[in-house]
Length: 287
Ligand SMILES: Nc1ncnc2c1ncn2[C@@H]1O[C@H](COP(=O)(O)OP(=O)(O)O)[C@@H](O)[C@H]1O
Ligand SMILES: [Mg+2]
Image (tube, rainbow, N blue to C red):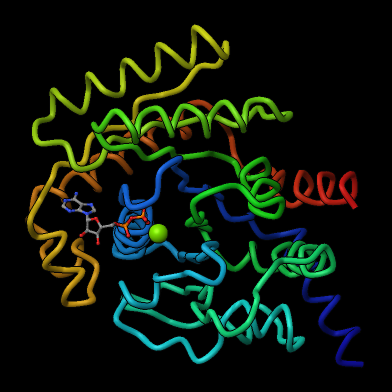
């Protein structure tokens, strides 16, 4: 009876709801600021009244709960190994941000086996109607399960810093994604730039290289400055967007989101639940 009621509710949601916009935040090199950008974009969207689910995909090494200053009683490990559902392992952060913790225990091997990916897809299919945005903070590297997520989301945000090593690693990551069947828009972000110009030059060069060698268009989303308040906020375990809303990094988060939202509003009508369809297709092909 409960199952029937649930599937009816899910069916109704599917008919009347609008699925969340999904995007993944990726990089080549670790430590470039993916998690901070994910958390603070989530905070900015939540502040504007959107319902946000932040998914920590750095499985086994996640730190979103640390950045939000919260304990995560449950993690993705409970989903994979203990049969809990996504809605049961969901935690609530500041401004009602929902997040799913990736867990950071080295004492157990946490790997997304195929069966877990299948279950994840089924649960996301329903959960996406409860949110306006689903943000995936990806770990460094590209395990099969994270690659499937990256190839399925509506949009990919690639984060680099102005350092040559971060740029070449970002390019390698983009090349790797482009070698798969990949048609989602790519948005480039330069974090930790000492000057706006330095960031823009970094991003134009990266965009040029992607176009020249991979034949793929990428959009420059913007530059987030090096800002001492970011580190201060990390130490206080609060998103800088909430703790220091007037700092330059917080203002840039607003600007980045503004240009992203304006961009897709003008290009697309939205509401097509492609994410789960793509994810399921890739998973079935690989398993
Ligand atoms: N814009 C910035 N200004 C100053 N420090 C930053 C900035 N972005 C990130 N950092 C520093 O870099 C560290 C790593 O960032 P993090 O978001 O954890 O990277 P990633 O998720 O890519 O590994 C942060 O703890 C912070 O100290
Ligand atoms: Mg991270």
